[in-house]
Length: 205
Image 1: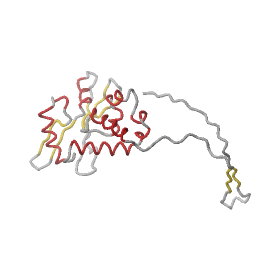
Image 2: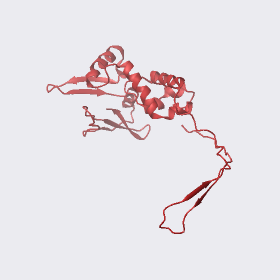
Image 3: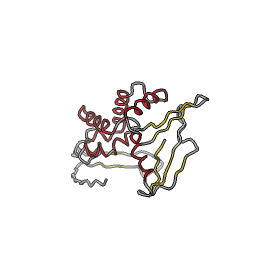
Image 4: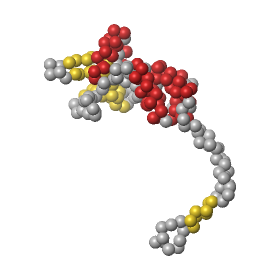
């Protein structure tokens, strides 16, 4: 989405003079300001009010918290529709702050999944999805425990999984190296080349 902004010029009468020694070995400078203050507009509000947090909670609710990240919430079609074509930051300046949005998302995830989203908490989530959602809408598709006690969890982003039905998808690339090894989970990825966008897309992780 392209956004065009208008630049407004504010004439400022504040000045300063900088004096430096002729001797270049002296690494000092004298800075003198005049007695006229700056007349620039105030910086935008950066502290999120309750109303800002509430609207972002609605964005999260529309998108869903499972597998959600700040980036996914910000760019979700449901978010753009809710905010009349704007991103959260365009709707309210405090929502440019990723940390604020991460904190809100973290709280919402804890409300929805009080047991967390670690490996131990995945099985109840899988069972709930299996009983309440049709297969194409599930994020977790299988939960397998091997004879060695290892756990294999297969997840797909639902709207990306639909790309498998695209006749232009003729290439699958399974990442046999670990896509992520931070923490207790080793992550592998499945990548396809989506002709419709002429770009690779990770549909499973």
